[in-house]
Amino acid sequence: MAQNTRETKIKEYYDVAVDLVTKCGPIFMEGYNKSKKEVMVKESFFDFVTVYDQQIEEKLTENLLKAFPESVFIGEETLAGKKKLPELTDEPTWIIDPIDGTTNYIHRLPHCGISVALAIDKELVIGIIYNPVDNELYSTRKGHGAFLNGEPIQVTGATEMSSAVVGLEITLVNVPQLRDRCLKRAYKLGSGAAGTRCLASAALSLAYVAKGTLDVYHVDYLKPWDVAAGVLLVREAGGVVYNTNGSAFNIMKPNLVAAGTESLAQAAIQLIEQADHIKDYKFT
Image 1 (tube, rainbow, N blue to C red):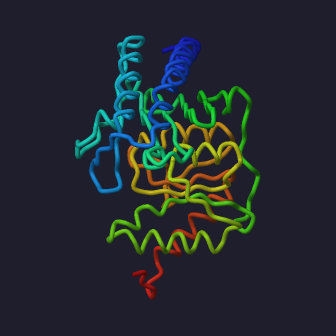
Image 2 (cartoon, helix red, strand yellow):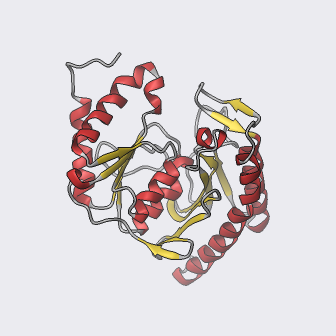
């Protein structure tokens, strides 16, 4: 595909997707405002799904497929219960999380939103994260910068952990075999940083790195739809994203460290490595 033709097509994908995501806002808010929701447990006791997750993903996939019949989908609810992720191909692939931060959503905590990304030729080219509660629409196209409600955003220039606010997730302390690793990493990152925050939404935490609210974000053991849109936002806002071990980030195996600067990312990666080698402390 010629570059101009490709850019025109990506812009078309982008415009349609932004419109569809914002039109899902009323469905999102209908459920958010209910004090009691129909909730189902998926793969683990802290992994929930609501009827609103299902309705939003269905609306997005149906309408994107209608507009772009060549589309392929990797969606949280579409793949629920399947043990293996599909391969990411060169086809235009929408990576969808209808409600990221479902536990927050259930409890009416505002850190939740709709996350949609598009990959073409295995490369992320569009990222959209919409938080209807706070009316925040984060959007990006590869090579065109990152935006919040149409205004450009960028990462902070922080280079030292001592001045950084770090986002991390500790929900996995509920999993016995992961408890020590999670707590040791929280200890090392927290001890070295100006502050730590656990927001329980990977998509929004990455958006916060992109707009400079967080300086670093670390999370492991998630799925592509949790982070795809946010990863592109961070990069387009001037930040960097690595695999937790310091290697190149792989969207289909999304363990990550995202940061506003290269030096900050490397500092966080080093602290995580140190944490993983702590031998003489046991959290019970």
